[in-house]
Length: 310
Length: 311
Image (cartoon, rainbow over all chains, first blue to last red; front, side, top):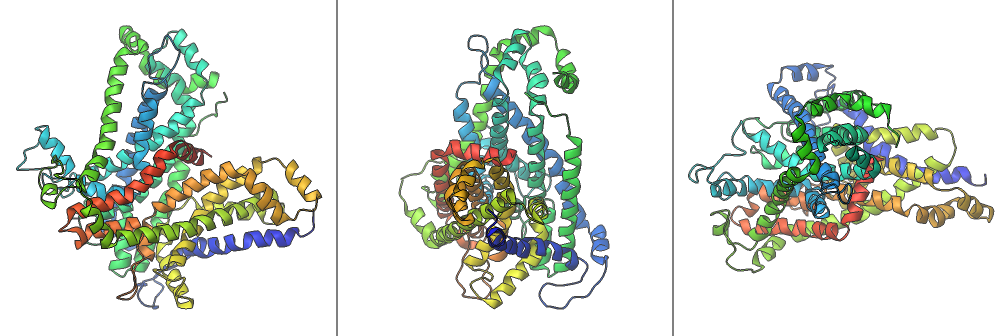
């Protein structure tokens, strides 16, 4: 058994570790270092400037706005997506007519699950181009087209979806929810299916209604999955780069109109690749890092509950 | 069951406060069924309508697309698809396939090798290396973006094959960033596999390497498929890494854009300004293969993605 064990271990671990440390861990570590310099990114020249980049971030109004938009998405995206996905999952698994056949989902549950999951397999960049066309500001975009057809919007004065400072962030949120619901619906469905049917049947026999069944049985038993979903959606909300940079107006990575849809990742990329402020961009990266760290700790702590065995 | 009661007592009170006749109507499901079917059908329409609209758009004329959103294509020809393909979609498609083939193979191979050794062999530093891998999946890629760009550029000075705008460079970066999750998932999978078969093979004089490839990998197939699907979608959907790393450094250098990146560029720049049908055709070309794969394997895709997330 012992023969050749260590050469084997080293042989198997060598390449993965070299790649991982070289291309992931080392750049992560470097970011912290660069964030303390005035490096432009274009030349080799850099000077140590301490925490100047961070104090500058505090006064940067664009960054403050971006942070605020990220926070808004961080709160709203998980809440809206999880609520809709839970509602649909409950319908598809236990929302059907009870009585004769015990507990079952509504008719066509399989079909809905397949269709709702569609956006999840499409690249976010393709979704971005798609929604860019849907949100066109003239009457030929699908969103305006539907509203005009329904008589809710005047054809001569269509909604300025992405060019309206008050609407643009909501448009982004809508796309994120639209594309995410299907995945979390399937995730919650899988968790619901592992709940034994007799628990539901016992509850129904005892005369509990659907609302009660949901809040007293399904939700508590599903809590761990909801928690996982929350963390994943929070990561999506901190990112959102592909979508914002490609559907919102503004040269170099979107964020417009007038920074009304600016998020940290778009501002970071612009500072780095356009403005030649690599050190400053790194400082933003570090802020995202601490944000994510605090976020995962808080969400794990806040959603902690006793594990239920069944 | 005490735990259940305790956890549910709060929201439960809210439901209990409702008038009883409404609760009764909820119980037989009739009202709720109409209500919920309405919502389900509405959401299904919201998913299908934009996709169908894009596919139809690739058959329309430019004037039709810029007119009412509800026009029906005058004829069903494939001109727009040909124009989209010529405008670079064909090349982007090929680039994506090349990178995906390389990165997927390497990710699965290196990821399961590392996970296997970490899961089934005792040695010094075992746990440290494992947790180092796990930690990597927690942080957003933005954190590393700036240094990564320069690292890949410097690699390009050693060999142009590895630098910016090179297939191999991007493949290695994809592999590196897919490793944490792959190792994390396969680690727990290898731990659950029985030791008996492996031990028997070792007694018969099978080498460690052979035992891995001929015994453990076949046994780990279900896990490999789950991670594989996860990685295919993740790497296919990757956007920020190619945007940063796959830009021509000198004028005239070949454009190695990935499909998603190329499509966005064409949509943003003037590439399609005068040719909206070609943009819609490009989107259709980019969506179709994924949708076909998804529809044929939807059960595996759904269960693979869910189990990958829940582990």
